[in-house]
Length: 416
Image 1 (spheres, rainbow, N blue to C red):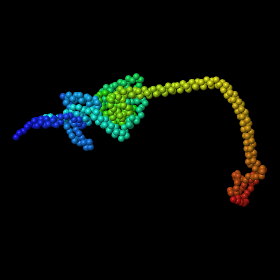
Image 2: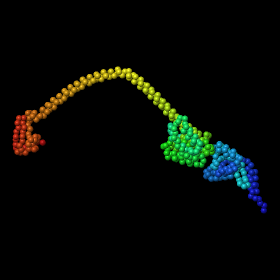
Image 3: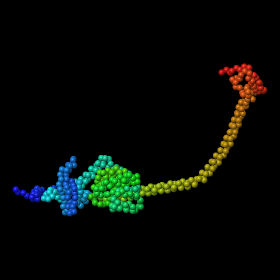
Image 4: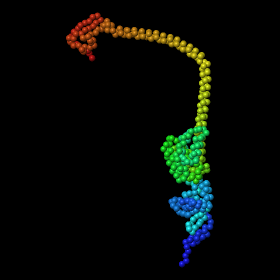
C-alpha cells in the first residue's frame, strides 16, 4: 500500500491552492482577536456575520507580517483616528495561503482606510440619529451659557499635560480674571474612558448647584483613542446633562460624537481656556460699556441740574418777594376773616342762649302753675295717673298760689 506523510499532503494542498489562487483579492470583513507578537507580526481573525442574526457565517485566520505591519499600522491609525484592534470593519487586500503547519490563512498586504473611516462615520451617524429620534441631540446646546462662567467642573486625567496647560492658561490670563475650577478625575483613553467620565458626570450632577459649566479635556495623545468618545452611553449622558458642556479633547481634525452634542467644542484644552477667558472678557466689556453709559448719563443729568439751579438762583429773590407779599396779603385777609367769623360765632351763640333761656322759662313749673296748671303728689311723689290711688288716700295739690290737702273718696280709672 502506497502512502504519504501528512506534511507531504499539506505541501501538495499548498501547491494546489497557490496554483488555484495566484491573484490577490480585496475582501470586506471584521477583525477579531487582534494581537501583535514580540517580533512585530500581527495575528488575528477575519470574520463575517449575518446582518440579521449576528451569527458567524465565515471565519479565516489572517496575519500581517512585520515588514508590512510596521507601515500599515501607523498609517491606519493616523488616517482613521482609531487603533488597529478587534471589532473593526475593514477592506483588506489578501493573498490566499496554505501553510503545511498552520493551515489555511490570509496574508494581509494592504488596507483601504477609507472603508473603515466610512464605517466609523456611519457608526457616529447612527448614534447621532438615535439621539435625534429620542429628542436629546441638541439639549445641551440649547442651555444658556452663563455670561461669567467662573465655577468650572473639569473632567480630565490629573496627570495629563493637557489638564496642566488648561489650568496654567486659565490662571495666568492677562486680564486677571478669577476662575474656580474643580477637578473630577477620569481616564481619558482606553476601555475605561466611557465608564469613568460618566462616573465623574454623576458626581458633578449631585452638586450641580455649585457649578456653572462642565469642561471635558484631554491632551493631544494618540488619535486612536478617539473611539472612546464615540459611544451612545457617553453621548446620551452628556446631551441630557443640566449644565453646558465644553469639550477640548485635543484633536484638530475629527469631531467625535461627544463634540457634536456638547454645548461648545474647542480644539484643545488651551483653546477651552481661551474660550472661557474670551467669554468673560466679552461680559466684562459689556459691563464697561454700561458703566461708561451710566457715567455719561449721570454727568449729563448733573450738568442739567446745575443749569437749572443757576436759573432758579436768578429768579429766586423775585419769587421769594412775591411769595412774601402774597403771604402778607393772605395773612391780613385771614385775620379779617377770623375776626368776622368770631363775631358771627358770638352772635350765633347769643341767639342760641336766648333760645335756651326761652325754652327753660316755658318748661319751668312756676310758669306752668302760673298758667293754671297744678301738681298733685302722694307722699311727695308726683302723680301722673290714678293707678296708685285708693279711697281714703291723702293727696297734696300744689297751685300757683298755695296748696290743697285732699282725701280721696272715689277713684275713677283713666279711659284707655
